[in-house]
Length: 146
Image (cartoon, rainbow, N blue to C red; front, side):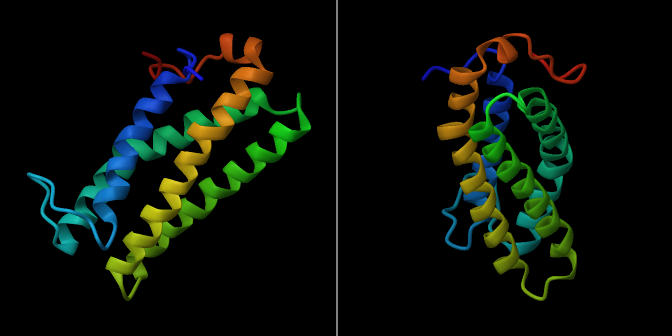
């Protein structure tokens, strides 16, 4: 299913976050200009979380609130995604105290990747299918639409 134009900005951010996931994994391939040492990976992750992830979660939470209360099946999916937001944010916060940064970054990468794939492959399509009017009238927080 083609992505609705109102959801495209979120999908673009997902691409940025999926690259971060590939980069943070223990078995990450070398990418030109991206060092693979733990400190560099951590620094990049912090920057992406600050510049992209925080605002992205806020936009998705806004989307979820707009879509909640119409279809019980979709409400259950939204509840699951919102819980995943909390878990991933908690993993990120706990990373500072982690005795094994490499393992912690790998776990965040795998959790975030699975979360994004679920949103893109399942939930966004369901939202477009079941709530076309809500999506059509969606307004992301100011300054966040393309």
